[in-house]
Amino acid sequence: MARRGHHHHLAEVALLASASEDLAAVGAGEREGWLDDPAVLPSLAPRARALAVASAARSVLAVVPVAGVGGGVTVRPALGPDDGRISAVEWVPLVGEDAEEAGGEGVAVAVGTDAGWLLFYSLAGDLLHKQSIYPSKILKLNFRERKENAWEDSGSDELSVVFPGVIARFDGADLQNMLQKSLHEVKSHLWKDKSEQEDAEEDSSFGRIPFQIWNVSKLSSCADAAIVGLMPPPLLELQSSQRHYCAITVGEDAVVSAYRLSEDRSRSIVGAILSRGVAATFSTISSLSKIIWRSEPSPTKKSRPKPQSFAKTSPLTCLKDSPRKGERLTLSPSGTLAAITDSLGRILLLDTHALVAVRLWKGYRDASCLFVEMLLNKDKASSSLHTEYTKSDYCLCLAIHAPRKGIIEIWQMRTGARLLTIPCPKGSRILQPSTRFMSSPFSSLYSPLEVYLFNGDSGQLSVLNRHIG
Image (tube, one colour):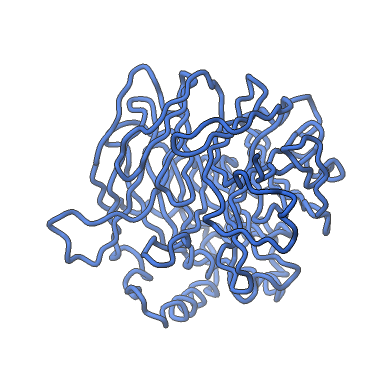
């Protein structure tokens, strides 16, 4: 992938105008600034290999290859009146033996609807899985890798599903196991006689991926939320083997609230079998899901499954600052920092372990934030192909896209200076792949957290140059 510099801090990765037919299905090119529409939902695949863009208004998903390998695909999910319309999109890696074969199709696209259904599609547009999660609008889907600290238990990979006042968590292994299976079945043409309509209507033909779900609306309404990571159990439960997670939410009544989420293992068939560290677990799950999977769909259409009951939630703290409303949050890779944007154009940097504000920026209305890792004062001339940078060479920064100012700023964490200001065309969005495949056994190279800029009007996808100074 040649990266031509159109600004010395940005390098072009691809020009996606050639994929305009697929992108046109989600509104590209109809008017200038089409990407500014909040109903347009872009998501970048791991290693920036493909771009998914969904239109909530049209309930259409376009998947466009970035590397120019193969054509794009337009998916119009067969959603019935009770299934809702697309409201969130995210990429999910399918790590495993089959992941990198078949032309590198090691990913699936997850689509959430405003009626609480979750659908997964292959790169070819095949429906891999459909499941009802909770009867409310899915605000956000977020896949997170947890392999940062191999020397401590930082939890497993996960997909979190955010609703107003509710958050659900899928374990990465459970999710990937089922999706790999589905992809294999699709490729074996076991479904060649089924129409997509049947797949969409008969969700009973799909197995059920287990998940945990919690109510996080006790302290405040919830416009966005994230699972920060594992946290120690309450003092009286130190001997418990139960896992506890910390979640933070932002919303109207409180800028930020924090909760302890307790895992409820008794509520899923897999939970009954799963005990930590059992190696045979996944083959057991796999055979179980096969039984469920291949069961014949019942002749009468089933009603929607009853929502799963909530696991235990304990409120920890909340920060109220009326009339300020928390709007969006983004987490650092380790989950120890969160950047929160609010309705008054301020950005709050939160230490998620101490639950205290570390920093505040003002005058950034409609801003979006992403964490990024930069090489500070590393000599570019010496950075030939032979220079291998490790994690310790990079410093964590926050990229703030301020569309009203037409700039992207890079600030060093936690309390460092502003390192860069980059002019940014209107109608652009900053994007970040959900996963970096950091645990590649074949490479010792560290894969830094990168930020991309997609200009909807020109079709140009660029990456932020990681060298500063």
